[in-house]
Image 1 (spheres, helix red, strand yellow):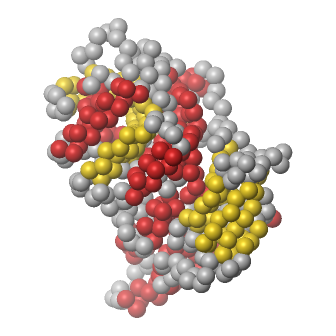
Image 2 (cartoon, helix red, strand yellow; image 1 turned 30 degrees about the vertical axis):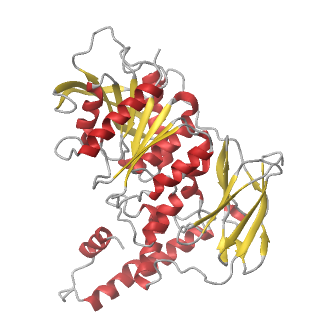
Image 3 (cartoon, one colour; image 1 turned 90 degrees about the horizontal axis):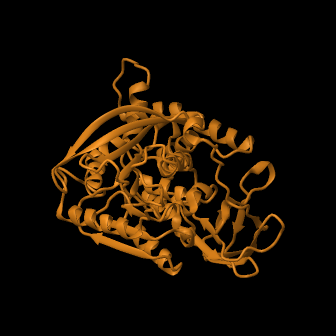
Length: 458
């Protein structure tokens, strides 16, 4: 269990005048999460809805306290699952990927043939909810009565047949006309940012906010080189940062110094860990930039986008929603397969920092609720990706470098142009300033070169 969550519960337990011994602590934990976890989880099932992230975390905490984490996996001989993926008219969908995941996140997947049929082998005995995605189609999990997960029971040596998985075309929310006015885009600050890398320079920065889908997104920034020609338009570099945008100002200023118009956005607290919601916010920012809402200096052509760590999941969703509006992307220390990342988490092979340390448990058990894991796994929709640059360090303890290897293999198999930069370093991100390393310098210039070759300008 996360020490942070323990601390929060500990500090909020009532004072009793007795020592907080292990025995008292265990009893308090039983009262604090035992009954509440069971009630919330049962309520989610009875209402026919997936439990909330909070309920999923409580369930995880309860199972951790009971000693049932990591989830046990049957060692009995495996079974198989067969079925078909179809569209709304019942026509088969070829090239769809169907996934079932073990309770610890380990995925088992297969592609559909021309007849839309699939066969997944070597599945440990147990109960699973299949999920699928296909080019041009939205991810969907198999559901039954009251929209509850439709569980398929896999038995040793037995081939189980699943009902058809029906996929609908992927259609992101339509953006309103006169977008800047519709979202009340407004300037909230004007300032400068200095950087000593790649050279001593100053960037002009403008902060923006807008209102969209019930939230105020106040994490938008534009960075421009201060010494630019007044009539010059600059190629757009679109940054989706994993933590507050202000933390990344040296990075933004460094890229601006290379004569890019850097438009940056970071997740807002109101969206929580919902990468899809963050992606739609980012999509609005991208559309505003391409519509000229940040001024004529920003070239309206298709830009390169960059994200890292958690924001790579946001960016992967943005790539689906934005379609051809992006000419390429760079993922730095990124997430490629959320199923295997969850498997690493439950096995204790990675250490997730706040505020994402309970992200995997918040999605629920992967064998029952595979959909959010599938949505944040671009390895299963690699054919829809634009030219890709993958950067990762072998020293990464947050997301292992195997994530990068898996994405590279999927992108190459799909015939998408891909470049990689793998290095030995302690850095998870691109550090500019006091944390700059030789690998970081090389990384920076590789990104600049990739952006100039693939980013499109008028």
